[in-house]
Image 1 (cartoon, rainbow, N blue to C red):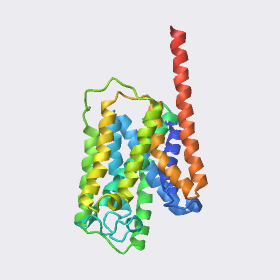
Image 2 (cartoon, rainbow, N blue to C red):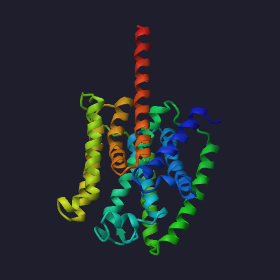
Image 3 (cartoon, rainbow, N blue to C red):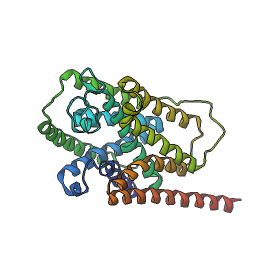
Length: 319
């Protein structure tokens, strides 16, 4: 039997994990009523729900969430869309990465960037905001619901893959397919078995606004690495990949060095990270998408403020 609030949380997570495609303009707003968006809604949404539930049932933490987010990014952009392998894939061309860092039949620079993009924007940030808006709902969905979701995901995957095969002439060989499957299985196993990472932590608790600024700065550097690094620094694909991975590793190290932040601080960090897609929507005239993004972040911020106030009142009463 499902917890009703857990169902609401799952629906919200399904919506917001796929909303990044609308925020970035990859899918026009008018296509929300199209079958394509329904399939993407199921693809993004069910995967994010399954990841959130798996982390709860495995009793794992945020590091495992990021690892599964990376596995999803690979699944989305290699097996589903084929963008990892197609040298003329529309997003590769649009970003000016055609032929840049293509090794072994893989668009490596684009693949690394999009894997990290989905890890952050399609999985990690939506899960943080879901936890803020619907606290205490992790691990509350029934097995039947999850199996039904997985079945819908299989249908959505099949239909999207069929459409992509018709849209793009290039098809990867079996070697490339097996390579990404092995990587995904390895990442899932690692997320399931990841032992606690114990680092000597700093005795500091950064203010939420400082975390917001850190999220915004990291977001800016990430998009710079994706679109401007090769033009402003040096057109070296290996250096470009190193910069992307080093940026994510640095932020991961910072999170491990800090004490476990309260949910309000996590929302502040997520808001800083998601500010760039919101600003991009504003500058491109996608006002509805920008407004929805702001409303979701504001709602999460207010909700966590109410929870903190209620906790403080409870402590006062107990004392």
